[in-house]
Length: 494
Image (cartoon, rainbow, N blue to C red):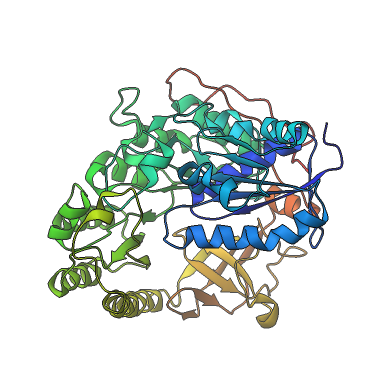
C-alpha cells in the first residue's frame, strides 16, 4: 500500500533501541516502504529515541527543528517519533514540534504503520502511548542491520528500582520470552547466515523469574551451545545482585559463549550503591569477577560507571577508583550523573556542581584508559580469532587495515595480507592473526594473516544482502533445540 515510499530510521540510545529499530524497519518494509538511498530525501523519517541522558530532549527537538524546512517544502513527508523519550514526553512532542505526524511509545512499536496511515488519512497528528506492552517485539518482523551478527531480545522491561534510572517507568516491568521462542529466533538468524548473536535484556540474570525457573538463563546459554552454525554468543547486561555461579559455569563450559562479561558497577562506594538502590556491595561485585576469572582466565570484563551521583564525596569517589584498580576492566563506559525528572535521585539533596563532576570524571577516564592500555599490552604476540566487522575502523581507509572483533569483544585493526587469504577478506569472514600493538581502546595486528575462512555471512555482505527474519510468536517454556522456523524465502532480505 506504500509502494515506492522511502523511509529512514534514526536511532538514539542503547542496544535495545537499535534492535527495536530493526523491528520498525521490518514492519515498514512489510507495509511496502523501501529504505531511502544515501543522500536522498526520505518520504518518512522515524526517530527512535532515548531518554536516559540529560541532553536527549535537546538533541531530539534540535533535530526536529532542522527537519521543519523539509516538511514545509514537502507536506506529504511524514515524521514519526517513538522510543523512550516519546513514552516520557507523549503529547508534549507535538506541542513543541507540531510538524510531527506520529508519536508512539515503547509498548506499541507494532502500531507504527497503522498510525502513519491514520495520520495521512485524517491529516492530523496521531499520538498513541500505551501503559503496558501491547505486542512482544519478537512477534514482529525485523530487517537486520548486520549480515553476521544479530540481537536477540530475551526480555523487555526491568523490575529493579535504581534511583537514577528512568528505564523501568518507560519500558515497564520485566516480561520474559519463553526459551523455545528465543532459540527459534536464534536458529532463524543462523539459517540466514548469522554467526554471532547477542542476547539482550535489562537484567539477563533475572530471566526466567516470570515463568518460575531460577536457572533459566544458564540453561539458555547452554542450549545456544547446541545450535549448529552459531559460532559466538554474547549477552548484556547482567545485574551483580542476581549473578549466580551456574551462569559462570555455563559460560565456561559452552564453547560458543564468548569469554566476555559486561557487568555494570555504577559506583565503588557502598554508601552510594545504597543511595542508588543497587542491591549489592563492592565486595560482592569483585567476588563475581574473581570467580569468572578463575573459570575463564582470559575473560575481558567491561562495565558502566556513574560519576557525580548526588551526595558523592571525594571519599566515595576514591572508593570507585579503588574498585577500578582491583577490577582491571578492559574498558568502561563512564557517565557523568544526569538528573532525570521523574527519578528519585532527581529529588535528592546535594546535587554536585558541574565542575566537581567533570574533574572527577576526567580522573576516572584517565585511570580506566591507563588500566585498559596495560591489559591490552599484555596481548601483544597472542594469536586472536576475529569476526571481520563492517565500519568499525574509522581510519581503515587511510591505514589500509580492516577491523574485527576478537572472541573477548576487543576491537582489532588488522592488515588483510598474506598467502592465507582466500581471494579477498570480507566483513563476516573469520580470520586469525597475531597482535602486534596494544592501545587503550583497540589492538593492532600488522602481520600477515595466519588463516582466513570465507563464510556465508561474508557472501551476504558482498552481495549486499541483510537477514530479514519473521516474528516468533509466544510459546510454552521449553529448552533444547526448537522446531525449525519458517524463514523469509530466498535467503536474506533486500
